[in-house]
Length: 52
Image (tube, rainbow, N blue to C red; front, side):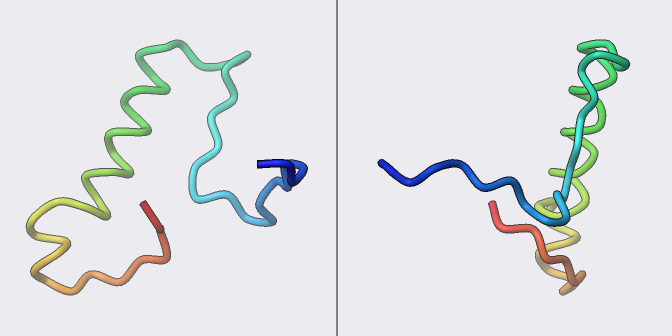
């Protein structure tokens, strides 16, 4: 992979690790995963633009 990193224009999740604790970051990450990947979200057709 020789392409330079390009930051997304609108990140689905941004964690300011200088202001948030590890627990807060993990909570926010798990919250996002549950919202977009839980069985209810997958079966209910809840729309999202996350690509995991």
